[in-house]
Amino acid sequence: MNNELFINEKSEVAAISREMADLDLVSGSSGNVSMRILNQKSGYMAITPMGLPYSELQDKDIVVVDEELESIDDSGVPSSESLLHLGIYRSRPDVKAVIHTHSTFSSVAALTHDGIPPILDEMVIYIGGSIQVSEYAFPGSEELAKNVCKALGDKNAALISNHGAVSVGTNLREALNVSILMERIAKIYCYARMNNQMNPLPESAIEKERAIFEMKRKSKQSNGEY
Ligand SMILES: [Zn+2]
Image (cartoon, rainbow, N blue to C red; front, side, top):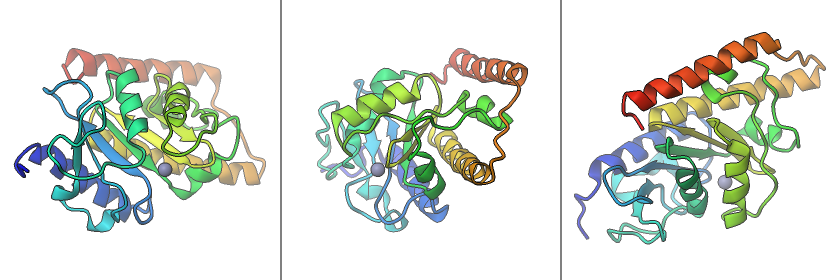
């Protein structure tokens, strides 16, 4: 095994995973983090391993896999949700990082069928609008990957039915920021529903904020970020 292979990517994934654990977005080894490996054959990604607690994760624990989910440097067994990460990279060329969490309020919101309507300004600007819930599928399955990609569409977050949430970004920091925002939105949504205080954003604001979301995406494209 060559321990020097993809050392920067492994280090980035391990650092964000520990941060995610410190933020209480996951517990134990639940949830997972990956980044697309650029300048390699399509489908290569660095991903957290199966079954190791995030708080203790080290750079060497991160697994690099090809499109068949084979470890390309004998670095270990990838996360059981690898098909979800792979499915998102295949369907969204703009995405460079994926974070799947089991955060508490997002998991509560994932018990609904209709997801979260646009209730906060930053939700439209950073996520792209309402947050959809995927149709139920068994954890780790190809069907789950397909259903989550459908719920995600062109947005930066989705809820996974009876399970948790997924966030994406052009880098790991952006994906983590979306995960934090997602959990905050879900918390506000749950409290608002309990108190029957649902008051969606005005259509005119959603339109303007969606234009900002699309402008930010275009500027990333023209800056070569994807
Ligand atoms: Zn999960």
